[in-house]
Length: 302
Image 1 (spheres, helix red, strand yellow):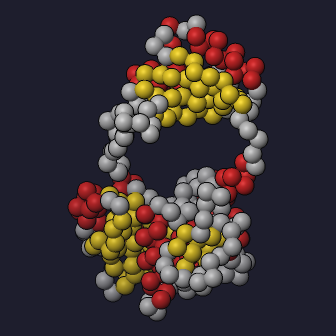
Image 2 (cartoon, helix red, strand yellow):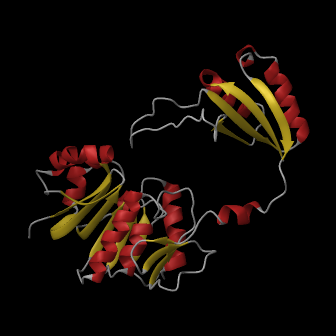
C-alpha cells in the first residue's frame, strides 16, 4: 500500500478529493495540515447542525493506493489539472505492513452501560464486574452502545429490570443493530418484536440476536415493519426527531393501556417539538440527557 499526500487550500478540498477518488484511491482522508502547531484550526458544529467550515485553510489530503505506480500516476494527472494549481503533491510514501484487523479491533473496548451491564465486542473478554453483557460487533447498522442516544436507551432498559418493572411485550421500532431488542429480552421482556425499514439492519439484528439469544425459544422476532401486530407494553424508538414526529400517531397507537413509550435521537432544542407532536396522544417528559441529546418517555393512561 502507498499513500499520496497532497497539500490543498480549503476551497479546493472537495474537488481534489473527488478527483483522487476517481483516479483509483482506495480511501481518501482530509486532515489539518497545521495540526499540532500554533496555526491549528478546530472545526466545531452544534449537534445536528451543519458546520461552518468543512475543511481547513491548509488541508492535507491523504489518498491510499494499492501500489506505488498507481499513486504516482494519480499525482502526475492531478498536476496537469487547472483546479490543482493552488495545490501541490507533497509525497508518495509506502505504508508499513500491519495486521489491520487486529489494529481495528484494538480501537474498540467493552462499553459500560451500568456498573454491571456491558456491550462487549466478540473478540474482547468481558470485564469481571459484568453480570449482563451483549456481544456485538461494530457493523453497518446503527447501534453499538457508544452513541448517547443508544446508551440512554440501554440504561433505561437496565434500570427497569433492576427495579423490577416489567417490560412485558416490547417493540423496538427502527432496530438498527438490534441492540435495544436484545437488551429488552435480557432484562425480562416477555417477547420482543424488532423492526426496521432497512433490510441490512434486519440482517444485522438477526445475526446479533443469534449471537446473544436463542431466537428459537426466547420470543424475539425480527423483520420489516409489517411484522408489527397489536399493542405493546413497551415501545422503543431510537431514530431521529423528524421521523419521530411523523410517526407519532403510529407509535402511540402501538402502546397498550398503561404501557411505556421511549423515544431517542432527539436534541435538547427539539424537546418542545416532540412534546407538541405527541401531546394529543401521550405526554412526554425528558428522562435523561447526555451531550446535547435527550431521552423522552411517556406512559399511556390505563
